Length: 603
Image (cartoon, rainbow, N blue to C red; front, side, top):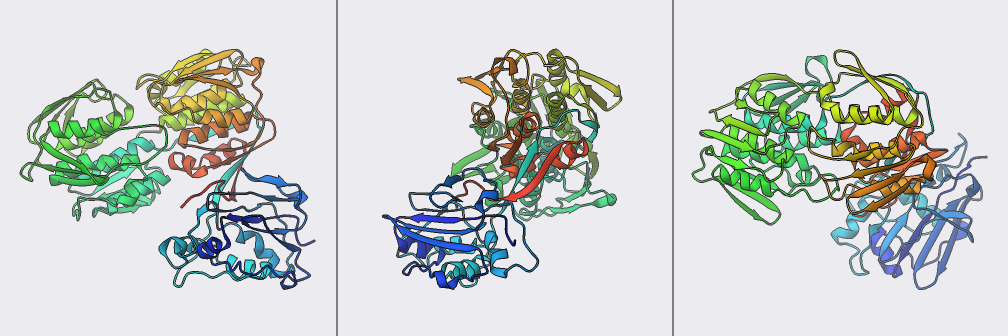
């Protein structure tokens, strides 16, 4: 038996011409069944009911696992998805067994369906425009000959284009208890991003250690390289050591495409205007967890003598005479981490003394201050609500080690709590985790420092006790740990309450947890979580990570759920966790990283 899998491609458009224009499929004639080899278990069906609908499927669909968003078509007995409003949809099955002697067109057919998912179609007169070319350019190379053969139609690729598949990755998580082992905690993502931005302030080479290998870090590398900074990872024979040389800046305008994908890249605006007297930075992107305005950044820079103009999606900043910023005083209406870091970088090279009041006190802010001080900056008060910076003419070389990631450490503590496991973590700085440790202890976990830089968590009472949590700026309970704790609380006894005060839209993971059986009610910015004795019972389900920490929360829930949990949106998780799945497997967790198609992907 060559195949025990099924895959289908369903395309629904307002008219056949749109389909032809978008992907080059000649729909003016019906597929020829005779074009399909008798040895290839593929069927082709064509029907019209006001729209074009093409379905191609391998045999034996009963063995297929469905991906998120699929539905079973009872008349065809194959997995498919419909679409409307001028979108093309396609999906791929992941479960397959290929015989070494199987027909080549059959063995490649499922990979044809990894090429499109909700790609915008074009009208009948735009077959050669850039939009349709963009769609065709994302076709898998295998699609052109194989779908053409299987359907009796012709697939044409745009001239000169380089088709590439749109496969993404997902996690498959199974229930697991009693994990045991040690986890090495990576360098703090949020600290590394700020320090990398701050490296622009120095005109000498720098060596940064314990820099995690994350999507966000790689994007920040691209931002720095776009203004002339040289980056070399792996110095000193350590993958986590990075040489950063900003001695020869070539631009004050970083690449817009990258900046819009990474909010932290906006922080280079302070370093650029501080050193160069000018910066042009696109409005930032990043996690979709609510509005995070830049007004504090702008007003703070203006307090240091900068002229700021926002137009056409870019923030233009320059000093009055092209020289240095001027020291000044600024009160932050909210202790924003990003604004504190931006203004600290800008003030480090300003003329005179700057006083920043009501600033963020997060460990990552202190780490940035320590880095700038190691380069020659004069800063005092970091870690309190007032920071005083006396500007210097230039910053020099330095070697600096990033602090451990307190949120990664907190996530593994939560993972141990939800699975009743014995886990040790290092390196950690326990005082950075005071609020998290205190809450876990109140819930019934045993958490202790076994030696300097090492924490150990073990089961206490079970089920865990319900609790109440309010997220606050440091040293309060971190908003970045709220989703993970919510997953843990679904397994506790009693009713828990979480109030989110930092980000107004940080409850999007609730809907995904509800798909898994969690009983959670949202009222404004407050979540009421019913524990296991009040109806919450987690079951494996297809879910999607909506942001970085939401993804981590779903992984934790999957480890406590009956059955298998399929998590899409792994790219969100990879933004902030270095090899999360690998580290969990090292403890005995059942988690796999698999290729899959996104449920929705729009160009």
